[in-house]
Amino acid sequence: MNKTNSNIKEVHYWSYLYHYAAKKAYVDLIIKNNKSIRNRLSQIYKICVKGVFIGLISDFNRRKESYKNKQLLHKMKWLTLLSIDFLFSLSVLLIPRAVLFPIIKVYADLRFHILKKNHKVKKGKQKHNLFANQSAVSTGNLRLTEDRIAKTNRQIDLSLRKVVMENRKIMKPTITDEEKGLQILAQGR
Image (cartoon, rainbow, N blue to C red):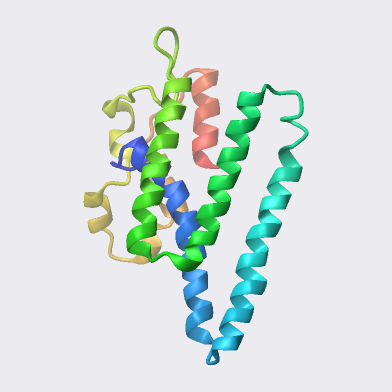
């Protein structure tokens, strides 16, 4: 559930961004911490390049059984997505952030568009559908807004635990079993 003021398309991009930003930061650490070029290249090869190939083989082996009896189009889509992930992981080594992150943003937006097209319910019940319009009344005061962040004095007040504890105080008592289940999930039990 999106508890920020950002739209779900942006939140979807974050899941791609943190993955590749972390890889980029790790490569930068390797480059900064080693004095000799030989050590830098050796570590980048051993940890990053080799790791990308091992990850590709692992992803392929893990999912090949589930795609064994699929149609050719599904297999091609799976292999294309696997290849794109592989290329992005390798490009972290070569492409600067200013170029890489906008490319990843376009890819994440494309994937989001496909998800929305495939899963948005046009008719019927969609109360818990990601693409359903959430009412601002039900979640408005529980959101972690820029204003709420600005009012905090200590970094610990922005921790997930503190935010959840504050939200528990604001939430109204549950009535139905479904609401009780959702509240238990929201409380992190």
